[in-house]
Image (spheres, rainbow, N blue to C red):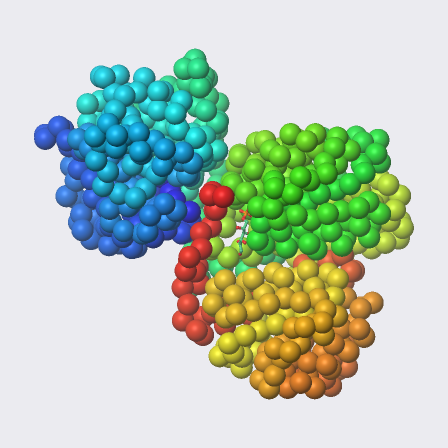
Length: 611
Ligand code: F6R
């Protein structure tokens, strides 16, 4: 997704902006640009280039060509207008004296553009962002802040804006609505950024802008105002993320590094939440009475986070006997969902900034639901708008394809199912105890699975040339198959589908032919015989079958499947937490063998802040 960085200080701005943009590359983008104020000429120097950041960096000799100590930079992921030099940000006003970088979408841009064209304003790009730059200039009469204020009254949609004006080169303006923006405080300098990673090497003192706020950044500090232009005191927080944790370490890809980090991430996520044989959530937003009174649980999320919700539904319903509905966040808003004050809405998001998920959260709140979010990025928008946040503490996830965030989200939802089950008396005490013991063993068991990565690499070498792959399974294995299939398709570009094993025969089995690859997920013991009978069905139609099951079923499974990968035995609750690891590794190795851009798959972005 688009990235923003801005700097005002004593040093040359362009190299700092390029470095900040480099840290944001992981978000996914298709072009980049910078604007720097040149004091000698009194003008803005703007350079933009389609493609990777190094294209821009080479054009401006790593920033040396642009002289000036204040500027803004951007990496763009196209929404309005194709990826191109001219559509890249910064977008400028007709005179070139106002430059704007923008994340989000201006929903009424077409109407505003027609208005400006009718006033004789010429447009250079197809972007919604150019409307903002042009409109600021249209209203500008020597007071930049008031012109920005007038523009904010007219634009609708989601936006984080960084604004630089050649007439006021001793300030940068930042605006936020529904798209994250962070302010950074340095010695004799100030920063703005869409993501703290962009400025972490320069400052750890940051504040998070709230919706509707406007900030004026100068070399000596930052002033912040609310939407009525009343001054706001911002809390400055110290970010203690390890900078190296946001780098690749010794690994070839972030995705592999993050797969390997899962035992540690799980320890961080789980250990503090199991104390004296109990699941503990500090200051839980619902009282025991409120939990008992819940009539329904909704889980809303997108992509892999939604897949966590799919597994979570099976666990929560089994262990709490409360009805659970899982909804895609992008659908939730438009389906007139049945939510009341007796509904708990669990919102799952790694980034905490996914626009669809955020919109679903607000819709659920509007309808009276209690919001509990499971989020990785601390201080993110979703976290801040929830009644209760359960952080996953997975650490920064850089690869576009999620791995450790998925695993930790899953761990949190399993803990939640146990917590509710215990409180409601719907989980037998012995099952509760054994589940907690299994939880303690989980990180080590994940390590065991990871230590056998070469077996998965071998299977990947056997099957990486297949054009189409089916994942089948029942119940939690089916829900897991959704994630296995998504992982494979998003990074290896192989067509893949996940099916409930028993559903295949109702149509899709017609696609199975000699050489089709079916990944059969058969870890759930009570459904093992049923799933294996579906495996026989696809085998007899010519499919090659790679099966995933528990160690005790290896021999049996090996009699039918062409390849078997086993995971250690554990309670049903935690089977998906182990099974997902070989599926992540399989996708990774297949993509590697196909020469794909693993950390930045085509057309994808890490944080999807558009609808
Ligand atoms: C897939 C993936 C995406 C995200 C989805 C939601 O590997 O990462 O499907 O899960 O875009 O993102 P968050 O969890 O940040 O809301």
